[in-house]
Amino acid sequence: MTSARPIPDDVRRFVMTSVPTVPYLEAMLLFNAAPELRRNRADVASLLYLNEQTAGELLEALCSAGAIVPVESAPGRFRYAPSEAAHAAISKLAEVYAGNLVGVTNLIHDRTQRSAQRFADAFKLREDR
Image 1 (cartoon, rainbow, N blue to C red):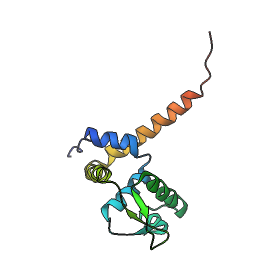
Image 2: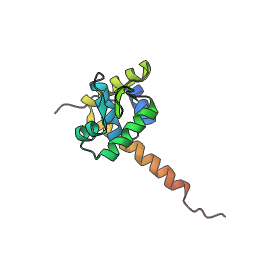
Image 3: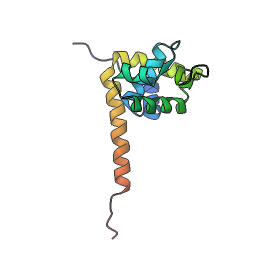
């Protein structure tokens, strides 16, 4: 059995600051893998086994993050268009994910779990004195 590739610190930081969920990651990597393609909600839903509403929400989130942009000549379609720095980070994440899918997935889940715990902790009742 071979050991998984370690997750470099820069990729770890990118995941922790920029990748909220595994479906978000998968959608981002879908565009990164074929930047020449113009995809719509139905394409993303079909390729990632999601419903179209969820796919639409992912597309909106990726647009807000600057990873994709709407195609003006094809309403409802999107193309990959991150900044050069973001493209480099996404491409490196794609390489690491290919070699350590479980590690990257666990990192995302750990991040989500910590965020949920911080949110829950903010509402804990405390005994004063």
